[in-house]
Image (cartoon, rainbow, N blue to C red; front, side, top):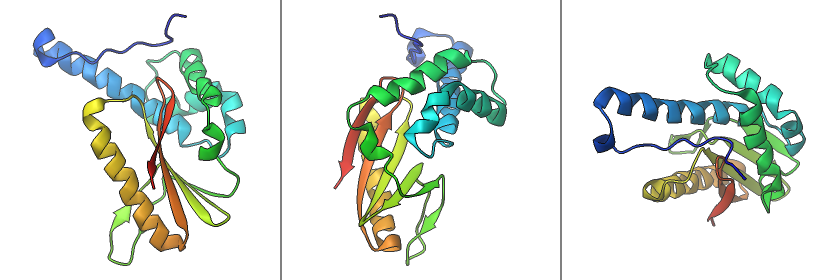
Length: 172
């Protein structure tokens, strides 16, 4: 099967300076559009109309350089990832919301769901970068620790990679 979208982030030594910036910027812009589309997903049912979400995301970001159908198929592939339901449980959902702990630390997770006796925290990443995993994990752990204090419930934290769909449980 041919990939829907392939964006290789080149090394600085492979390209002229301007070309390097342009390609890197395109990759980051893709992540922003996908992230924005997911920020409108309250339940997995919302992904059934992924193309509408992508079109809204492109409108909100002002970035129309993408094929909405291809990006929608990319988002719909998330529905096939084993365990995806655990990241989108029924409950009170907070999307892109700031939370503050008693010490004044402010965090802004991508998705928080309070359900039953636990808090589910999800951070979206467009793609897996081995060099950044430690930072990603630390970020989600920090979110979880703050949210356990805010809600008085145990938290569970996940990274959801979008382009090559996969889930990584990182807390506890």
